[in-house]
Length: 386
Image (cartoon, rainbow, N blue to C red):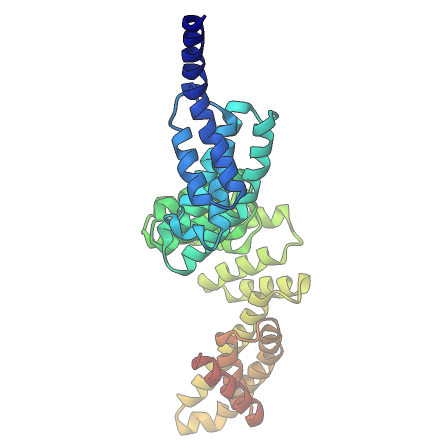
């Protein structure tokens, strides 16, 4: 009996006094959860980091979900966040929740919770990106924006801000990738094409610029800026007839588009076909009185005619001037007066446009409207100080 008792006692001691390996490792997860709940996140972190590298617990969704909660908790804590490297909390929380979803599926007990938790990280990732950008740490900003984009793949804002950060560090390849990613997400924005075009210009890549312009026109076939860029490319390459054919085709397709007439008017101006240019500017204003370019260019056209008349008078000898000088000066004054309503309308549409301010100030001066001339001159000086 004693012998039997001794054996049973020893057996009980072995099984009761020394927990199994599996039980010990499971307790690491349990301890992590307990420490997390009592606010001891540093200890919870130590426990869970052991659990994720152990073969008994590393394959469990609960382990990874718990790790995500602990790192997210540290990230949000004013005390424990100081123990993390920049970006560490976000990255580890995200990868932990992602692993939990991978192991448990999006509808499993822990996978479902991980999906919801992962969503809450978006705002933190995005804000870290903004803070890093403001601190001119563009690499860290890009990293944070890309993480935010991973969290919400359908979101375009983080991708756009990543492009801005790449541009800020002169990483044109990275910026192009982000802008093109936006276009692939069906993101509608004239500005994206403008940024791609500007980068191509900065890199003096004419082939890339031409490609971007064609893509932009496919998306925005009646956009004035893109049409002008396309026309300028055609004109610069000696394809004036090609450019005119393009704009005529666009007008035939959309005859009520004021911008198209303004663009063709600019083109005629470049070709010194003044009467045709005037006709198009007038048509543009007829269709849309708020077309700034057309209003301004009509003002410029009358201004130039006035200047030409006064120049002719000033170059006459005394005898000729006595016969014809006053006639040319009267003609010049007439054109200066004709330019005023166009310049005034253009200034109403764009109150701080320097070219309009300077032109109209000169017209007022020539017409003897000194108070108006001085008023605009004061505004020009004020803008020059900014």
